[in-house]
Length: 222
Image 1 (cartoon, rainbow, N blue to C red):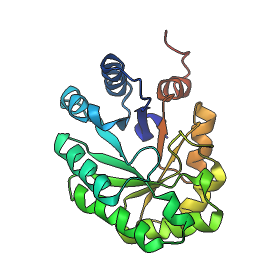
Image 2 (tube, rainbow, N blue to C red):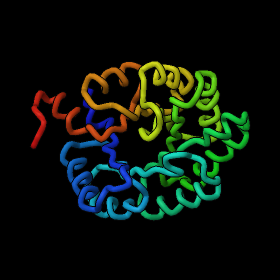
Image 3 (cartoon, helix red, strand yellow):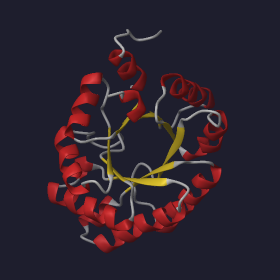
């Protein structure tokens, strides 16, 4: 398995500069990563830099809390697609899950899926560290009903990241109808192998170069 092709090469820090994002794109093209994942202000910049490559442009919606209005998420999604985003990683509304309002959660996701249309696929970040196992299972079902292409573990900005147990649970619920993205705290080839063995078919990480070089038997580049 070539782990590089599973990796969304990620830079979501608020202080990320244009030069750092440019470097991210250059690295993604060099190592053959699936995509770069950046904040939406950089989507058009990345789309232009990567237009002659196979690297996709992924951005985040309602990030990192997921608590903005559905209309706001949909507007952000539409703008990102217009700017050239191929994939949208939206944060689920955890507060509405805790309130038991699953209908709101479903509609929230549907609005982003509708805004994405056929131009971009939608991954839904569950923020698993904040949910019970029952909530994770129901959330996966709701994501499927709402038309999401993937369920994703974590933002990397909350109290915990991806675990193999959560990935296995999500894969069980997703079946063959959705992909599973593991994200948050994945820093080594061993971590990537563990997530893939648990059922992940996409990995979000800022350590993609280390993983790719480790798989090739190389040391870290300077």
